[in-house]
Image (cartoon, rainbow, N blue to C red; front, side):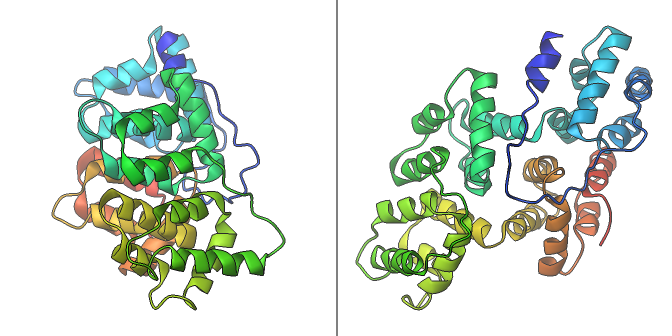
Length: 337
């Protein structure tokens, strides 16, 4: 049981998250965990492994249902299902299926850990995960991170980054963002827009501290109005200003934040588009977004993808991936648009 509990951990409930969800993976009706577990056991034992059955089941069940299947499997086979899947699968398909055996929050926490573990930091992954998650999601990630790794997320982030980039990530991880309010404070909107302009485009150099404070502490609806108001002060919009004022990981982080404040699902759609530009897909990025968003907002990401790229996410995945991995991704995608 140790491995199952280590991987599946505590079920983390989303406490009053204000963001509506648009999942592509929803609870399957007339769910029978014992039947699913038996089919997976047979699929694993089959000579050459029946990957199709494994993905058809696990990619069509929610995390809570997969968890029940894992417990049913353990009762049946007297073996840990995750260990069995590890032994049976390989490559990108293995990564995807093992990712599905974690809750969304556990998956995010594990991906952050992997991005800062060992030599060198995978800044791109770290930026995507920290800068695109809501305040509520980050609070949950911090709790689960400590449960899984017995370390504070803040300490790990601080130890692996430096300078203004570190200051921005730490400010976000501190989760001090205001909750959205029903009252629109036009005076504060104007003041924040002016301060962003005066801390950047208006002066030589950039007062990054001011930018960090505003972007890490104000609510998302407030910031959307701030960026709109900002255009009346600055000749450039917020994204153009960021590109002019800062570079490197700090630039990428601020851009990710602003893109997510303006339209989070479009941000993920564009990340997927970039990851499937060349001949072969960047499996790591595609897997991470598909696995982490399939129970959150992948249906809306699909809509934004079609609008921005002129072709469906389903068709794009079909063109850039192959085999059982492709089949798993298309199942998570949940349909063509």
